[in-house]
Length: 276
Image 1 (tube, one colour):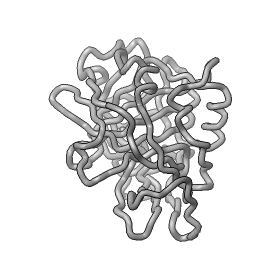
Image 2 (image 1 turned 60 degrees about the horizontal axis):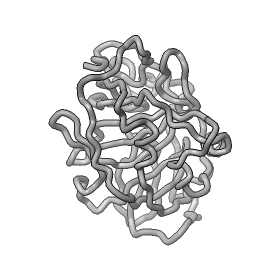
Image 3 (image 1 turned 180 degrees about the horizontal axis):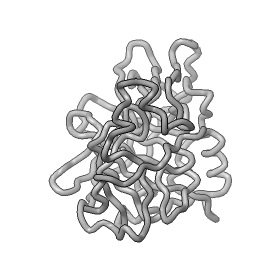
C-alpha cells in the first residue's frame, strides 16, 4: 500500500483513502443511492505530477525527494525466482458485508470503508504481531507489479492502516480477463467514469469472493515498500498474491473503460527485503 484531492461534501471529515496517489475522500452523512456532486468546485484532480513521467517526480517538488533517493520504492518486478513468502503470513478478520462508498478516484474504480472514527472497528488482518485495518481499495490499470515479466490488465489494492490511521500495508491482487464473471466485481454498481469523480454510490461489499479468488493469500510475495506516487513515503508492507483474480471479459472492459493509466515505472530492488 493510496493521492489526488477528492472532496465530496463541504462539511465532512476528510481523510486519505489510498496508499498510492494521495487523493482525499470526504466521509460525511450517508448518501441515499447514487448521487452526483454538481458544484464544479467541490471536486478537483489537479496534480503537479503524472504517472507517464514517474522517473521525473523528484524534479517537480522538493517534497518528492524520496521518489528518487528512497531505498524501498514501489512497485518492483517479482517472479517465482524470488520464491514465495514463508513469513508474515496474514490472518484475515473480514466478516460479513462492509458498508462504504463506491466512486472513481480519478484513475479508476475505488471504495472507501464507512469510518466512525475508530479504525479498529474496520475489517482487519494480522501478520506477525501487527494488526492493520482496511481503509478502502482502488484499482490501478495496468497492474503496478509485473510477475515473471508479465503485467496484468489491472491491480486491486486493499489499503490498510494502523490503529492511528497511518498507511501501513497493502494487499495487492492482480486482475485479468477470464471465461467467467468475478463474483466480487459482480457486487459493484455500474462503473463510475474517471470524468465523474463527483459521483459516489453507497454500497455494501462482501470481500469473501475477493479473498477466495486468491486463496486468502496462501501464496504471496511480500516486501518493504512505499506509496506508488508522490510523496513516495516508505514503510509500507506489501503483500502481492500469486494467484490472479479473473474477471469476465465485459467486466474487464468496464473496469478499463473507467480507468486511466496509473502504473508507476517499476523500481530497482534495493533494500526491499523480498520475502524476508
